[in-house]
Amino acid sequence: MPIDSGDTSWMLICTGLVMLMTPALGFFEAGLIRSKNSLSIIMQTFSGLAILSVLWFVIGFTLVYAPSYGGIIGRLDWAFFNEVPFKTSLGYAPTIPGVTFGTYQMMFAVITPLLITGAFAERLKWSSFLIFIIAWSLIVYYPLAHWVWGKGWLAKLGVFDFAGGIVIHTSAGMGSLAAALVLGRRRDFGPDIMVPHNIPLAVLGAALLWIGWFGFNAGSALASGSLAANTLLVSHIASATSACVWILLSWKRSKKASTTAVINGAVAGLAGVTPAAGYITAQSSFFLGIVLGLVSYYAILLLKEHWKIDDALDVSSVHGITGIVGSLAIGLVATTFVNPNGPTGLFYGNPMQLAIQAVGIAVAAILGFVGTIVIMKLISRTIGLRVEEHEEDIGLDITQHAERAYVE
Amino acid sequence: MKMVQAIIRAERMPDLKAHLRSIGVGGMTVYSVSGWSKKRELHLQWRGQPVSYDLVPKTKFEIVIPDEQLDSVIRTITQHARTGSSGDHGDGIIFVSTIEHAINIATLEKDEKGII
Image 1 (cartoon, each protein chain N blue to C red):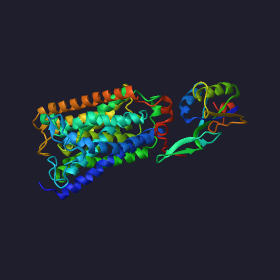
Image 2: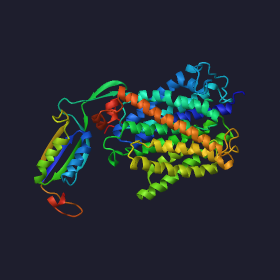
Image 3: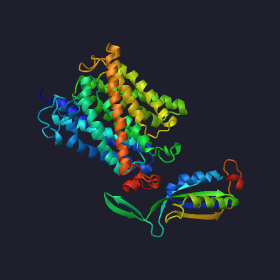
Image 4: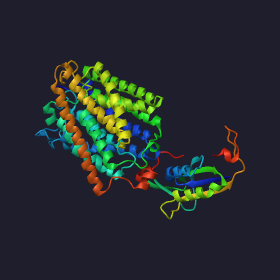
């Protein structure tokens, strides 16, 4: 098929939108933690954008998308983007240049390991962070993305994941749970340390994430046109509905509607609708958004308040649990009326899809959880994971980076 | 009544605040300040270049207490604002002064009744 200029324009814009999500994630997280650690998480996300882009260029793209060794991992044909065409397309996206497909997917490979920064915020050493994101990409993300999106064994099994609920949110979410467990709680864990130091900054980050997600989900159609249009609506409705649920739940619980709650609800809705966005109707998305808002809100109460697991920014609930719910939703409400190349769910007459989705989710959850534990234990036994206690008291900005976010 | 003013390391404040409250101090005013003294400097960087600043960020607080609480307050501050058991340069300083009057604006209670 020839290169289509409309599709190419749309995908170039989407590449920029998804790129923007990584610094946006940094602002979102920085605003919600204490000022003495705010630069450290901005540094992790922004430098992660650079480091993981290079890693994807060198080895990631070829491991995920090059022709497969038996459905397990891609060959090395496309290392350093060698032989990736810019005048013609790849089979994955037949109407856009091959390099555009590769660059668009680069932004996904960048943000996925960086979601876990929210779990280990305010206590992980910078050097340990650096090793962690590289190892996690190689051991968890690249194989999993190949299995689902690179014509690997999960794709052959019939697992569907439109924009990354299994590959991204389930794996990073369960990885966050594992990271929080291995790393342990922050010092003086409790309400005193959960002080969002700059809520407007967090709202700015959430706003940029929301618009970036249009590129993330609707761009995963890999073309402009009707599917992208419906996907954008589906994504927006799930996000808005989930945000409404969080407004009501925070209002009910603390007698005041909360700013930090509404932005978390929006992000939870976006993360949860991601896998299903290109397969379901906007009407299904409305109901999915309600479910996503409820499960993410109550998952946080269970994990953080009841079990006292210090996943600092609740990545395991806001991304992990919602990613699992959204990926299962494919097995219920997906319909070929929306996407002729997609699956059919239980409500449209295909009960098997639910079981197939569950297999994909289980594989991603186990790989994300166990892979993270193994990487973190290895780092712990060599260079160590946590900063010293007095460094944690002073803050990561000064002790890890010799910089301050704010000067009075 | 005495006013105790202390300049301490910012990171010691949460711990110290909890201990002062537990010995019955009735209230506290806290400031973020920066200052210089002797040869202490703050070593940071600017675009990868090392830079030293003579103004070091600190926390300052003020409490007003009945005379008989002074010893226990001083003991609590010196114990919990210190680095390790022997202390280190930069742990800070305590000033004690005498207060003539205190009036609670809401209740109009005066002096020691007004500060508890």
